[in-house]
Image 1: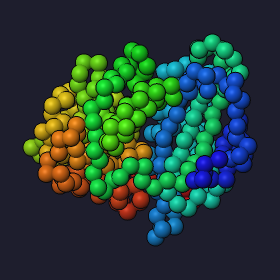
Image 2: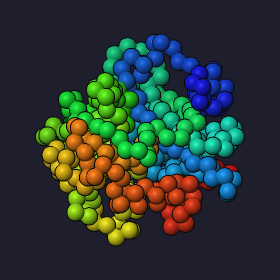
Image 3: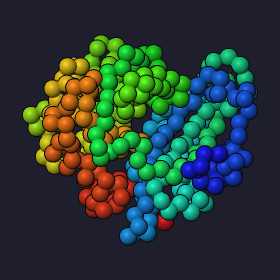
Image 4: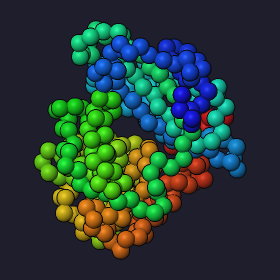
Length: 307
């Protein structure tokens, strides 16, 4: 069990001690990557003595949509997943920042890579987690030699566990080359996303981000950032972005459940802007962190209180 794990996990229809949540080495999803998952954060507000889960209904809906896309053999509703998550957090008496991983997987002990006629199940575990990547000092990145897979190869609107081999290759390549993170191009050569993050650039005061057909995940944090930016009065354009535009961007930042909002200071050893966090990124990041901690009243409807 990981050191930052909580004592309890949801497994096979009930909450059990985390050390008892185990699968066989013959489990279908372990062999073939035939599962879908979500990544969800909860933020503890000390002053309010409450834990707030960020956009919980949206995450649960996307997870159920992922099962539909992949034809996973399970009947479960977004509301049922929400209740599992909230019950689990309360059972663990979670009063710190948490990361939640609901995972729906082919649980049968069978051979043959397929989704039909294979039993599926859901598990949910929680980890104590603050920053996953540095959000304050700027990230160094490189354009990966690995191409982001297309939607007609592995559905990009579904968080498929097996698809993260693509991310792992890009991430390892970046780190082994002395960088913090990778940036994918899509099959057409346009910018897609990071290894596990959506991407935004700023040029001449306008925010640009790749489109859904650029093989990106339809990020829930991405959607939130677009709304925050528009509410601040910024123009946000979803379009194809050329690789060389990364190098001449005034600002560049990632968004995602894990990364939250983190600015990029370098792409392929080219400094972005003046090498410091840009004013637009800084403002969006500030409001984002106020929002998720429950200190921004405008977006309280994005939060689900646990207690």
